[in-house]
Amino acid sequence: MTQAIAGFSLYLIGIFFAPIYTPHLSERYGRSIIYLISIAACGLLHLGASFSKTYASLAVCRFFAGFFGGPCLVLIEGTFADVWSAETTNTYYAFLAISSYIGTAVGTLPSFSLYSDKLLTIYSGPLVGNFVTQAGGWQWTEWSTSILALIVFALGVGVPETYAREIPRRRNRARGLAPPHQPPAESGITIAQMIKVTVINPIKQLALEPVVTMIAFALALNWGAAFQFFITVPVVLSSVYNFSPKQVGLAFTGAIGGALFAGACAVAIEQAIYRSCKKPMALEKRLIPAMYGSLMMTASLFWIGWTADPKIHYVSPIAGTAIYIWGSMSVLVRTPPPYISHS
Image (tube, rainbow, N blue to C red):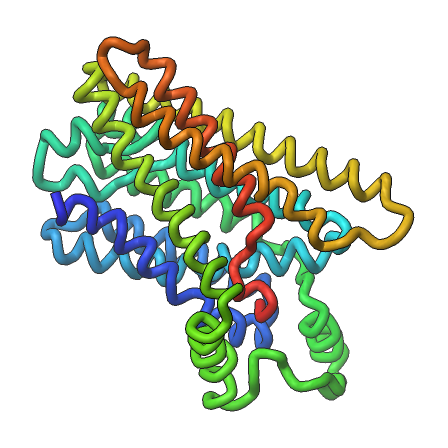
């Protein structure tokens, strides 16, 4: 069981390193080239995982797929900030969060199928993962991800640069001119400065700033519980309600519905407040989704825990999952990760 879950977790552990090195690369080379390299490398490593013959090779490919694919998660928030105004912060975060949650609910958990048919039956993945695994084997969970990476890579070729520092640099290079004079990069120039900005300073803030500590703890709890759902929900539905793998996959439509509701509410609230304000919007007003979202998270956990019983219809825990995702995403929309300011 530990090995089965580790294949999923190693991908997330690889993503953990992206906020450390991505800002420095983006400051020097812009966003577009980082996207293309990241997507291509991630797709190839998923392809490598599909041909793994040992657990070690699968684990290595999964880790580095997250390590090299992580920059896309870091840069997308900076890209939205490049092209959208500050008054629509919650709106574009809502779109990002919807993509993350729906992608996870629709996507695949490829690591749970290499050695145990029982684990394959229970943990082959959410909506798409269950169907492709049942139809073509566990390798298709990796192949479908690689195919998606190829499509995204093709769509990304030729997309213009959005980073304000890189646009004039490329313009001058194309015209044969000297690089434009620019202020020093916020992420640092020397290796020591880079380490201080993206490693030492965040650790100091995490340890010494109570607000940062509590926000980090809340984010960790939120994400941990959210991803834990994608492991425990199949177990509950399979063991308590005798769901087949395909039925388990369809049950994740509740999570998709919760994400859509959360995004719609966050956008509607922000736009309503923005249009009603005669002066610049106070940042505190953007916390409204997090305020009601935290209550929904707590209530839904009790809801699911108390109603996941054969005597109670399966719709109840599925609805509770939708409420949890609604609340969880509402909180995340307004508590962005601390690395955004550097990316």
